[in-house]
Length: 76
Image 1: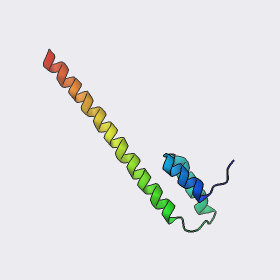
Image 2: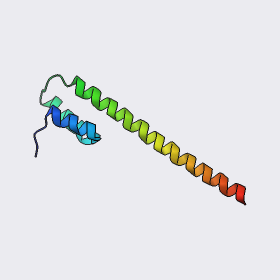
Image 3: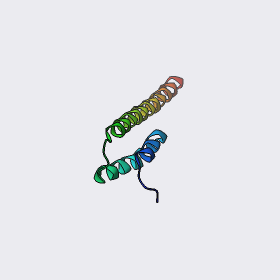
Image 4: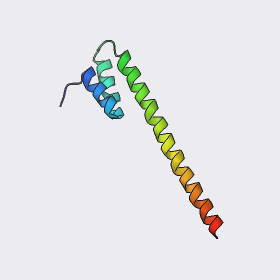
């Protein structure tokens, strides 16, 4: 298994592997690694972006269902 380093955490965050990045950040914090504020901030921004994207996808899907339902109602 690879040793957890700030560089590895940053790579996981940028690639979107947020669960493993969080786990590694916690390991670094428990291990006493200093100055993780930048990584925490990067993680929080990536998490926020992922949540916004998930909400957009859900709203887009809901809108598509509404449009299909309206189309079916209008055609009958």
